[in-house]
Image (cartoon, rainbow, N blue to C red; front, side, top):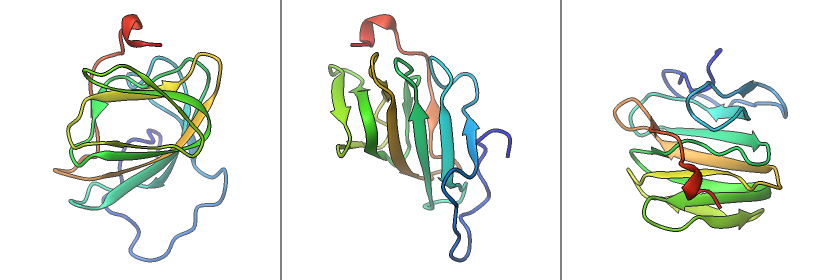
Length: 143
């Protein structure tokens, strides 16, 4: 799978193991302000199944605005990040924090200017997708 966001047809039908460091890829262009790494943990296009990934974002890189048709849960693993839902101010998050974005809520997240940021995300599939990518974050939206 060259593009880590190209989903498999369904989650594995039985227990599967992904070893630490396996399957880490660079995100495709058009989803963030710069390059970062992602490890797809679960991948599916099947209605109601989940997708899950671990990300490794360098300082100052943020995702583009996006939404998830069934919502998204982020759990911060390491570093300092920034999250923002449309209409609210950006919020700083740290290791151990969890963030819920409601279904179809426009938002972005990324690394603070002076810190890398790593998180685990889980999102469910609706109509064959778990994410809708939108435009870049304007400089004025960043902290």
